Length: 119
Image (cartoon, rainbow, N blue to C red):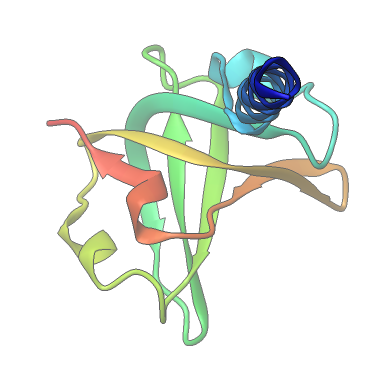
């Protein structure tokens, strides 16, 4: 009886570990993000090239070190009061789902903790 409980507990722990591996974002470059399939959870780091504040959502354009390759990180204004502390030239890390609109890839950022200002 105790052995069966231990086996079930071990199996549950293994399944939980495998599940957590699947929900972790892939940390990739912006060039890789631009060719990543839609719906994949990723994390990119880059320099803020521009910020566009809208009435219901805003976006931050994040570029690689050459400022040649960029991806936008879009987010709801309701979730991001702290995002207004991000300025052009800052280095940020953004985590989100890859989405596509008219053949342009972007990150859909869901929570405030998914956009981090590094410097």
